[in-house]
Image 1 (tube, rainbow, N blue to C red):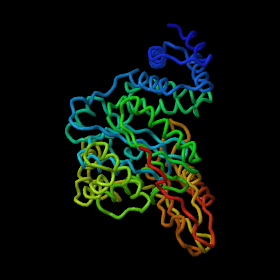
Image 2 (cartoon, rainbow, N blue to C red; image 1 turned 180 degrees about the vertical axis):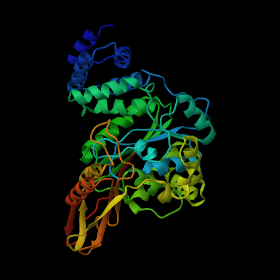
Image 3 (cartoon, rainbow, N blue to C red; image 1 turned 45 degrees about the vertical axis):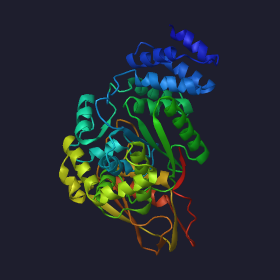
Image 4 (cartoon, helix red, strand yellow; image 1 turned 90 degrees about the vertical axis):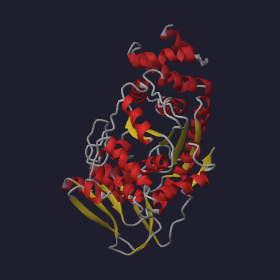
Length: 436
């Protein structure tokens, strides 16, 4: 098999076989196919598209380009969750322990934040000593004992995705729907899961801003997951304003821990948490439907078993379990702070999510490049949300940073994300649609 022939085939718009797609994925993983040929193939796929069968074949080939997790020795259904990314979206930190406390096996492989969106791995690593770089053998052992592990992609899991993702970025082929689907699901298929709940976001702070495009992505993900034998549900959620009241790695983790401890969390965060948990518990075979799953989710928070599951995970992964008892004391918070106050009276009409995300990056909570370090204690704590009545001088948010110039820049960007009005804004439903 020659890559030149495969380039010509895809350039001509012909459908590729599973064997040909396997050849490309393995060549990307081991370096036997040069970058210029891989980039050419990506452009041909971008322009001519991939059929559903090709997309599933490429996804499977990418997943098998390395060492797949083998969870066959673990009883029960294995369910993960994927979010397309947003601002203040630390839901996974609370969601995974809740589902596991209900008896679902939860292998949750996550990524790092990039651009204006946060990453679950950064939020986990805000806990001192917490290790997300786990060997596959350790993940299996942890899952057998606790039913829960939250970890990052290893060099051995879907290695071709790392190469192809970098080349997509460099060859202007990022927006291809089949390539997005293959990138997301190859890592999930490599986890050996049986079920997947996807939080597909739309709005100003989302990867895809308009609902139609985000829904198309959700449908494509659902179709490919089905072909791969993974039961899947997509929850379409709005991301025009930050979710919850915390933005930043340590700050978001502390918020999730407090919710697990029984504190009443922000209404929007709680709605997304319970909705996703309901479906995870249902797909995990622990509830007859999502509504019963939501009831069970609330029950394990109320009886403390979800917090205990979180504490077990932290111990297994080298973190300080005292975080579960007093997150404010044991989670980092940057030493400098500033209050952001309302400049007008009336109602807070908007808090534009993307702008707030970049404001948190300016504080040090995010990264512009993949190799940039993050300040685990930087971020915002929101005191007001869009729709709240405000008076001039009311505190809308508190900003935290480790340097005065970062603090000033973050505050400036945050203030630019705000709008005021004489009337409360009309809000669209946070959960717009559930695609089953």
